[in-house]
Image (tube, rainbow, N blue to C red; front, side):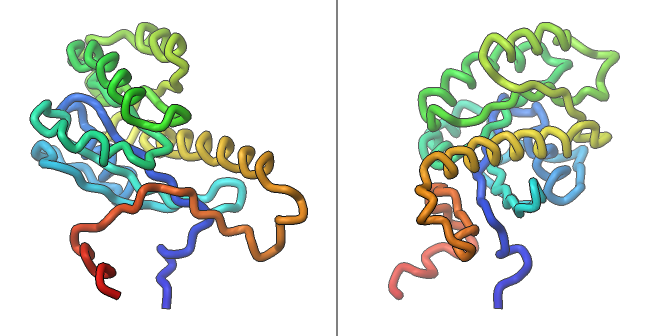
Length: 215
């Protein structure tokens, strides 16, 4: 018998990218579990978590991937981006270098991800306003030049975390649903065909790995 978590209309894979230490893991845990860990260590390899939200009466299940920002883990690049329909490109508003590196992350994203991926620039740690090193207007202008949406968040005090994920998932949903309307002849649409699983590359939860290899 399927759990409630198995019932969804759309499944979207969203990746978190950006330098190490900008707060990607805490954004993930704040959105999916409403938790924040001040002592969180750098992510080793890849982890993902899921959460479902409602958009226009549809259940959108977000599968959000988080990886280490350190150079030495870059071998996972292509598998990490495969099937992603959205990306949150995160920097720390109090560390200008993490913002300078956004350009490199954006190039990597454009090289490895689907060309239609929806990208949001996220200035995290907005609670550190007294240490701000990246002016909001500067980041907003960069986002506009590169056709990205933009938001500032704080995983620590929850500011705009819900909005960031809801906004990008809603944007992806609108693009995907419009594409389905354009691609579907009317005679193919039936009351029973309203559940759409958006193709995300097969992802294996390490805990369940190899379960189906010899069925």
